[in-house]
Amino acid sequence: MNPVSRYIAVAIQTDYGDASDWETVEKNMKNCGRLIDWAMLSYSSLEFPIKLVAFPEYFIQGIPYTTKNALLHHRIPVKIPGDVTDYFQKIAQKYDIYIAAGSLLEYDETWDEAIGLVNDSEYGLQAGVYTTSIHRAFDAVERLEVGGVIINDIPTFRVDNMPYGGVKNSGIGKEGVKYSTEEMTELKFVSFVL
Image (tube, rainbow, N blue to C red; front, side, top):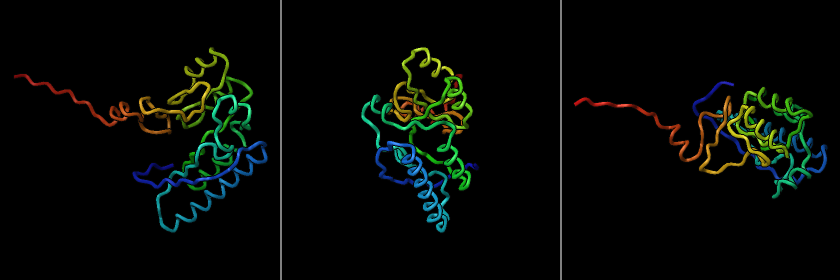
């Protein structure tokens, strides 16, 4: 994708209930694909440089749960890579856009393969890792090539005083008051000999 200096971000609000089976996840995924098609067609006549289409959190899997336990036991896990990631990758390539698709509860059969899949991505904003093993938690922190690792919570967690930002193609710098200021400041040393 070619970088642009200014672009339009399209936000699409959905009202999907909680998905209790894979068929509902698949239906919501395809509905979101149709919404992206409609948005791109609608805005193309205005010649807006659309580069980002964003959905609210959990757009495929329904509303977020208030506890981690409920999140883990009532979500339909999405295999990565798999049907969902492949579907949205094709749409993103079709329109030359990025899609902020919310968080999906993802799983993989093996720990090392899951770490490898995350690291093989050209993106790396944050990762949420659910584990009961302190060893795996520290392994994820050490090995994942992302801007932040959230253990036992969703990857979109952030507060203003923490450095929030990605690596690779997931941004240029860090958010957060202190970190944004540092990113936008260029230090210059000056010395006077009087």
